[in-house]
Length: 248
Image (cartoon, rainbow, N blue to C red):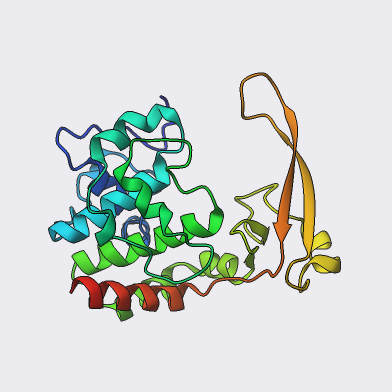
């Protein structure tokens, strides 16, 4: 595994790998680096990042979401299998939505399989939202502080969130994000006959998939209406209330 000089590698000598990774995934750590005015994340930056020390229940919920987000291929099976938990009934989605399936957390007790990780865009976004909330709570921040950080320091993310749409299965059907080229329909297609489609109507895109051994193949992606977007601040409020009430 290699990377460019904008980052450097970290080795973790104990079982805190997933906890550290979960913190680095959050908006809070993005904010921390932004206010330090750093263009790269090297040792002098990483060494001063705070280490969250949550309660046992919160620690496991952070670890669970890191596993669900990262263990996408069999190369991560050993990481998954070494960290699976028997606390599956103690953890679940903080938001009720048909696209957030209970089996996402039910899978945490079993050895890794192709169905173990989160693969749909809507699920993955929600897991990151919940990591933001869990880590913020562990640091002793308030909900208002978390939302203020988002409002003041992340205007680009706000614009993306305001114009990213998901289908009934949780796929991104359109996004204003320039970091996701080729994801969903382009704006012209989206504005001309797709946006606002009635429930149940299906649309299709054919793409060239060059990510698998054996060379590129054609794949057809199905999108099912209705299409909706998310409100990040509302999702923070929902998750905060859920974790606060359930786990104090």
